[in-house]
Amino acid sequence: MHDGRIRWGVLSTAKIARNRLIPAIQASRNGALAAVASRELDRARACAQEFAIPRAHGSYQELLDDPDVDAVYVPLPTSLHHEWTLRAAAAGKHVLCDKPLAADVRQAQEMVDACRRAGVQLADGFMFRHDPRHARVLELIATGAVGELRRVRAAFAFPIVRDAANVRLAAGLDGGALGDVGCYGVSASCLYFNGLPDGVLGTLAIDREFGVDMDGSALLDFGPNRRAICDFSFVTAGRQRVEIVGSVASVTVDRCFIPLAAPGEIRIEYRDRAVEEVFQAFNTYVAEVENFGDAIQGRAALVVSGEEGVRNVRVLAAIRASAQSGARVAP
Image (cartoon, rainbow, N blue to C red; front, side, top):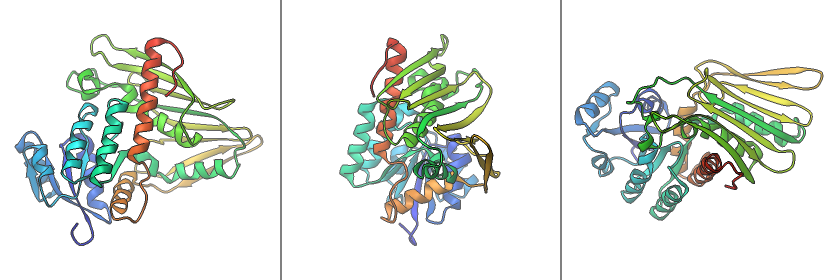
């Protein structure tokens, strides 16, 4: 650390890093950018010049060996999360890993175990969880304002260009709609029901050309009268919405996963009236970076820990297994 700030390194010049996390680190109260890495040094240098990052590295390992880096952000394809999180832990770096945490449960658990042994923090990159609207929904559930929670309906979708260069369509990199956008609905459902489902039923439409799921849905069973329905797609119009339904009221949150830079709201509907609560624009990426820095410094608990990331991967694996077998599968 320098001047009380976490010194960050970024493994890759991926779009999510350039557009979201690098600006968030620069805007944070407790973080500073120290280095960026790419497999092509020219790319790293261009990114470093664009964002005034002190050092550029021509390999990911060079960045991990940099003594002036405390923590790394890993925006690599899912298939590479396991390797580079383990390498980062071995180098003594704290890791904020893009979601989902890993390609399978074994890898996810190994990542958690490696970071624990190394004494470094590991967070799963579900930035939406820092949105104060979700905290408000949890408050409404906890206080009984919606009655008994009965349903969660989550949808995240957008139409994707069929381009072989898009990592979302690369089967070898663990692409597909479930891992890219379906994981958000799973995370929100488990958050609101405060645990894992007893079983899941999943459907996935696998694209013949790319070999990845382009469209799907999942029914998550949390016990009697408690269900979540998750809808995710690369072939429908864009949607971001979570609706929770209680025994006496429902709550809807639009633009709930990647909020726009504008005020947001929640809509609470009772039998005889509807109430809208408006929230100021909020940068969930900055909040994620600051929470991670606070956790490193022992000032806060992680909002989305590596252990929670393992649980999310367990549900995703169960959805895939159910889609393949046609049967209900327990996570």
